[in-house]
Length: 82
Length: 299
Image 1 (cartoon, rainbow over the protein chains, first blue to last red):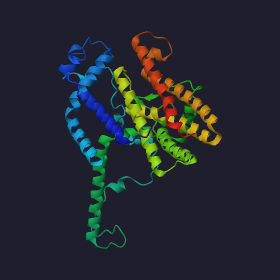
Image 2: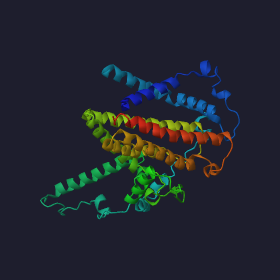
Image 3: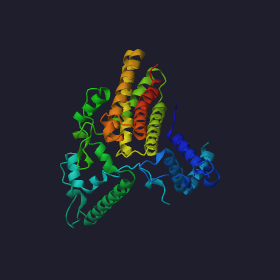
Image 4: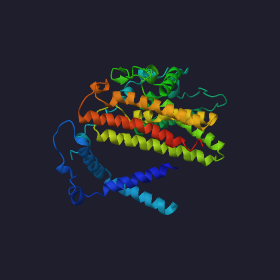
């Protein structure tokens, strides 16, 4: 498979977009992935599901604004260069 | 906003090596021998003295002054750029990974191809700082992966040439393709380490180094395959895959598993089981990549 660095960046952008679109109230809480439902104990083993939920929430919070810029740049590049 | 990294058990002991930057002078002598003959102080401060002819042929004090000003400006600009670059790419940390010598490289290459006789896989520490690779054969380095990557690209070009498929753009395609796979592998390992909440002092650069060790096996396989034919390629690749598998398991076992599990005793519990599976998955991914990146080269 011939990958280039740009296709990696595009794939990463698409994945982050996918995580950013998950709405907390309408979706994550419905399937039991809302962070307020999660916290079990404060033991030393959060478990994979809690880690995933934390990761989703962190990505959504941190990447909300930068994604606007990066998406715009990507759209412009795709329009100009195909 | 007390979520995210605080609750996770996965902590990379941050910047053990950042302490190195605080003791630059002595550290530089530990990592690298100072082979420069010039005194460092003579370059930094060139004090302009009117009437002092710094260069033959420049008898004008004004141009002397201009020369001195220009050189001091250049030095300042260089220092500024170094300081800013250090924020993005931790150059001082990278220096640790390139502090190797020939004996280390030889031993490490031997380990990568034949890890079965080596007994002690622990990395020596010196007051919380891992010893430089030239003093400890178990420490990860970045020299072998970098050289291996470049050699792999050249060997791939050679192999494609024997199939009459070579063109210069293909070198770039091979290089970026292999690099992308490397980056994806490191990201996948980082993600799985985060999810399994392993307390380890493996840094990202360590993972990059471990992922880059497979290039040695790939090069051996492809070169032998080009010289002696497909059967030898498959045999040597099989040998190198097994060797890398054992190498990764023995190295990662000490870093990822808990103390007692690493010594070989069977420890029950889902956490240790999960960590064992993770170690085996990381080690098993190496042969897969080794085959995937080389099978189209030897036809």
